[in-house]
Amino acid sequence: MRRVFTGINASPGIAIGRAFILSRTLQRVERKTIPEKRVPKQVKAFLSAIKKSMKEIETIRARLGADKAKELSTVLDTHIMLLQDDALRNDVIKIIEEQKVTASWAVSEHVGRFNKMLANLGGEYLSTRVADLNDIKNRILRNLGPGGGICCLDEAPEGSVVVAQDINPSEAVQINTARIVGFVTELGSKTSHSAIIAKAHEIPAVVGATGVLQNVKQGTRMIVDGIDGKVILSPTRKQLAEYENKRQSYKYYVIELLSAADLPAESRDGFRLAIEANIESPADVKTALRHGAAGIGLYRTEYLFIREGRIPTQEEHLASYKQVAEEIAPHSATIRTIDIGGEKLVDAVEMPPQRNPALGLRAIRLCFSRREIFKNQIKGILRAGLHGNLKIMFPMISGIEELKKGKAIIEECKKELRKAHVDFNADMEVGIMIEIPSAALTADILAPECDFFSIGTNDLIQYSIAIDRANEEVAYLYNPLHPAVLRTIKMVVEAGHRHKVRVGVCGEMAGEPLYALMLMGLGVDELSMNPVAIPAVKKVIRSSRLCESLKIASKALGFQTADEIEAYIYNVMSKRYPQEIATSLFF
Ligand code: PEP
Ligand code: MG
Image (cartoon, rainbow, N blue to C red; front, side, top):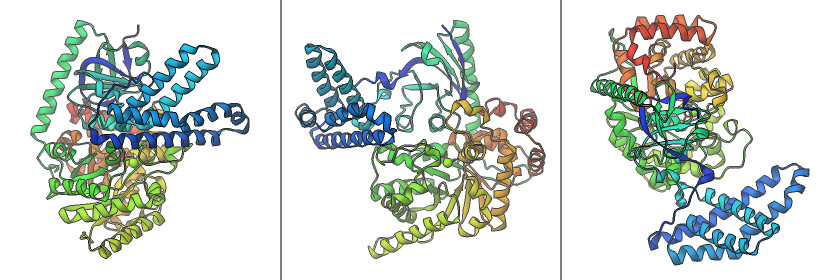
């Protein structure tokens, strides 16, 4: 049995725990009773899961070539027929209502009864029907989502290291930090959203660790080294002692960093950078403040949809942004309008199947096609703007037309609010993410139309170098130090500054001590990052000088390859800041 695996260090720290294997095919549904008042909601969830399942099958059929469609048409017809079957609907609803259980349990119960009956009858035809029924059951259960009551992560005992093929955003938001000490996935990269969430929860994580699932058993003792990207199964006593030491020293290092977190990010020659935090929920504001954030530079509001498993109301948008505005005051918070699509699929927002989701209907593009969802959010932000300093930011802007269209929708929302006599802040800053090369190249055209730029390097790198940011196979190409990326950042900064527009960076690159001085030297005004990254980045900036950072940036821009730039930056930074660079995730 293989015991040591190398993967990508996605969230620093050392975890020692027992494996909790999250396997979707092994998903077990527990019997959960619910209060009477939740019964109608479960029935509704079940009916919409049926509808969604039928739509999925129709889409599969539409995507099949003529030959395949013919070959599979009986199977697909059978599945549709099973989903339309009144007996299924009535029986499941009856189970929910009479037993007061979740829709997931009721579906499993119904299919279980049926399977038993068919198995007693025997025969090949009937065993095919059992397979069809199970297929349908899995589809419905998946479409019921975590809100429907199936969530294996819920069952993780204390001290668990979650091991999975991948963890999707809707699972990641349910990570219970009291019980889960680490996680390991076979897929993913440093900037996949599960990695970002692990970091925000300070849970050590290794992603892209191929082969672990084949070798691990439920409950196996294991070590996750999120600093060096290593996973060790069934460690020896010696390894346990060694990693316990490493765990302790990392813990003390973090405590020491935190003690200076509130000091400003000011270089020794008096240059100040604004350091802000990226958050996924209002609850993260406390963590951001504890780590020394002077504002929220990016609120990823799509998590409101992901967490609730449904489309929030305008009042819920308002409440969420109001809470952020009040808790972060007197600092500001930048509310990014939803970035749904791509890697971040949300059950509540129906999307057509897309061959290439990262290049498809995502973020602002989706908002333009689902205007009501967008307008509700904009109105919520405008109203919450009365309670603090909030800014609106559009993601995935590709050119000036989209920016103008987005701004026109803001004006439309203001008009409607006025007409309805609802108070709001009419004077909020509007900015955009620069994360698509076409926006970077036209930054000089975009700048006069907005108040700020925030460079989203996670996507900018993905789209500039043409690598899927969540694909571990090409993760080796994902290099923030590619000369194209540095040139793009410089160009955007210059275009912004020519029009007196502030330029920040809010991708994972901003939270990396290794790059802090280079970004400062490139002229960036703000860095917004995972809250836990703030103290180390501040420490680097506080012990530096502006002239030193200008030299680093200019030298870096002079190299031809990412490797040369990396060797240079690493050399300079690891001599000056050995400890910060030793825990760096990007090296
Ligand atoms: C980015 O792309 O750099 C970014 C900050 O946005 P997200 O990671 O949410 O796509
Ligand atoms: Mg992005």
